[in-house]
Length: 538
Image 1 (cartoon, rainbow, N blue to C red):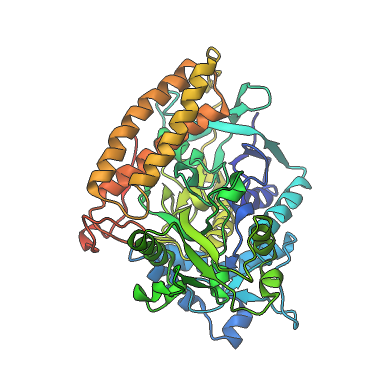
Image 2 (tube, rainbow, N blue to C red):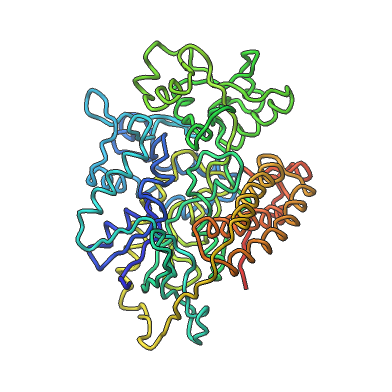
């Protein structure tokens, strides 16, 4: 299959790009699984932006949003990227509204704005507590109406195809991707001059995560194998408030997020004795940036031996949670917990990848024709810790900027030479059932060792142990991959181990504590490391 634009991923970043790009050429969107199986669709809180009305009436401005982002990023944000993305906030909200997103409004028809940790003002637009789902539905509906957009579900991108991979002695550039049709088991070639990675994050490398099962670092691993530069993978953000439900069955029950917006509306983190312990760590208490709150919870759990801490909203008026956070209220109720009567048991869980494929503010990677936007990318917006609700903003803004750059520079782009031959995918023998058990075992082992050794609090010794075991696991996974039929399970395991190694390798290099990378062996910031941690496969 050949198209002008190949988009890998179906969240806000990929679909927003596809909708805009359809004006300029043919677009193919591929996504493993179904369209709504994305981090975007699971996002509850909202999207941050400084609106004109907020500037006039609340005293908010882009400078304040920039300052909050830089503060949360602990010195590693790229100020140019922060300013560029935040300055386009208003326009990106207009885009989403035009696509059919209906953000909550006040009685006077102005937008209802929420507040989350690290923000100095109310600037979070939301659709109750299912903001991401409403955005995803609107984008999918819009994209499906466009004749120039082809959407293929259950198509798993295996690897990017570059001229360097093909052994062609010209400037390394993208020429397409090998893609598994999960329904037929056939591997097809998708050719394109412009390939956009919008594959989301890697939360499933950890045992406990707020992410959907699809978040296995696929785009990141593909880009790394293709030779793109990767940055700052040591910075994996843990969300402070994942519902603690140890007897739960099913993915959503085990990883149900209780939005930070609940704390923005007055929810308080307390221990079993009812004490608001977070103020011992930061005067902002429950609304401090996520790295501080997650470490405070981790410290409290280890100090007391408790299984969890609690998010208390019982002081709010009756009916408040049901009205403002209906999805959270009803979901908790379905698990047998009435949050208006009893505090919500919560624990931190892996949530967001702040590092990723290195890009500039036009989404360009270090490989010509390959772009990355959304969580898979590292633009410099998030630094060492993401400010809440900046992710949907980044995905939508960067989709606009990537297309703007491509269209402006089309005449300078080199087309794929007509004489390039891409070899067909070579199939392997079927995978024996006993080996499938090993795949499942290795999947579980990776996620547990990452949780035990590379989570909220780290040490040099734990990181070295993780690195040694991951090296062995990578050898085993290689044997599965090269020796047997390609399946989605084997592909995810391959990407899982690659992404885990990138996280560990970056964490070992950073001999300091900064943002969401905290190590007991180097507990202070060290300006010697005031730069990105970059890795590249040669």
